[in-house]
Image (cartoon, rainbow, N blue to C red):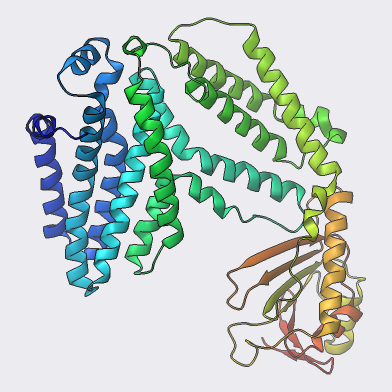
Length: 479
């Protein structure tokens, strides 16, 4: 399954490419004072080569004249494929391996570099096998290149539309955890492995994911190449997952992002369509343009506008259902038992008759047009870092959270929020975050109750001064 003669031919015929890559690698090593920077540059070059080399080495499969010549030489198709893939992998990997070795010496990494070298080899192999398989599913070079980029970006596109809908229809959540989508993109996992090498940590899950992708797409690649019909070269890509699927997929993704931008529901359908009419027209123009590229000719089939309008209706109906069903209860997927919960409440007052204004005037004699009440537990302060919130404080926070959920679904979003509640469930403030906007003002009685909690700090700011609310209810001027 490997042809030494064909491998020698590839080296001789591509010698200028190999010399150019070698020169770039040497310049990176010699000119880079920081080996970390050199590693990053080489990583970017390797990532680009993993997309470019399959097109360069296997260009003949989409050339009607060249494909007859290559498939008639006395070398089996399996040997042509395996030899070409090995050449691509070695061309991308060997420069990276040399830079990794220099990096290992500079950083004194030692024997772990053997593990890192294996991880990077697997990442390069999986990425090249994945890209080459997509390139073979297409029937011409343009479609093949588009499919390589489209499928590599596809998990990120899914991530974008899911988070767009979550932020629009699930109260409290601005983003969701969709880390599993990383495992659908070998490019993303290869970057993860590369970053893990840079930070000297292991990436076992991503390595296993790359191994699975390499095996699955290796099988797809083998079947697509060995059973490939010569007559397919240069024709429109009409396979199930080829260019037409890519067009419909990305148009659908864009439609769902548009429909979830403004928290769309049926009550404001006419206004929504008026505001986004130009956006829909531009998207339809792009849809038609990509279809023209696919067919390689200009024509206007009636089915395309029908399909587009149907897709618009489906996206609007689904997003409206998400809104009317209040996010299907996902807003209640909230971890309440984290002892290291960080609370950040920011209340804004522009009302001179508020009880906060009255309390401030009674305590300090100051009057101001606006007041800002900031309630938080300071995780940067050693005295407060490990303090747990009391049960009474957690009950108040949960009541405010439920009010924020109710306001999200029931009250119009006119931008005049009185209270912002942000909750981070993590000891170091880097884990799950929940954010709520609440219409009602926070009354002084509740503020005083929260101020009694030893884990919380409360400040009241006016146009001229800042005060800290003490545990006994008095105000201490900070400036």
